[in-house]
Length: 194
Image (cartoon, rainbow, N blue to C red):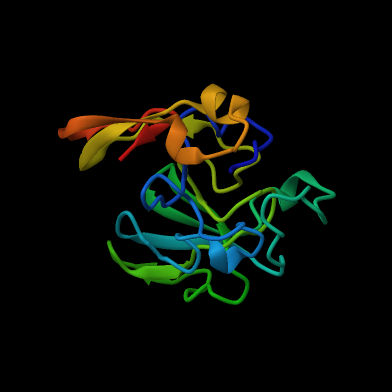
C-alpha cells in the first residue's frame, strides 16, 4: 500500500493499514471510501508541538498509478510533524484533504485527533505512514527507533505470496496465530499483523 519516501527516514517507519477478515477494502477497492481505514482518526502519539503541516494534496485513486508527485516533498501528501521531545519528531503522512485539525505552533496532548486517514501523496491505498525522525523535515531527518507500549501480534503477511496470487486475495497471504501474542515495549516489524 505504501510508497517509499526519499531519504533515510524509512528504517523504523511503519505503514499502517486496517484489515477486516484479512481484507483492506470492500468491493473492488477503487475508491478511497472502499478501504476500511479511510477516515480513521489519526491521534497524537505523545504530547508535543505541531512544527510542520503540509496540505493541498488530493486523494489518489487507489490501486492505480500515483499522479501529481513531481517533487520529493510530495511523497507524504497531506502530513503533520510534531516535536515530541528535543530532537524527536513524529511524522504522519497521507492524511485526507482538509481534515487536519491542528495548526503550526499548537500544543497537542497524547491521543488528540490530528486529522483523518487518507490516500494522498505517494500512496496506492489508504494507510498511515508514521515514524519518528531527528529533524522536522522528513526528507532530511534520520529515522529513530521506537517502541509501542503494548500491542498484540496477530500474525504476519506474506507479501510475495500475495503478489504471486492469481486472485490477489490479501487474506490468502495472512498467517495468523492461534492466540495473539502480547507485546510490550517492542517495535512492530515489516508485515506484522497487529
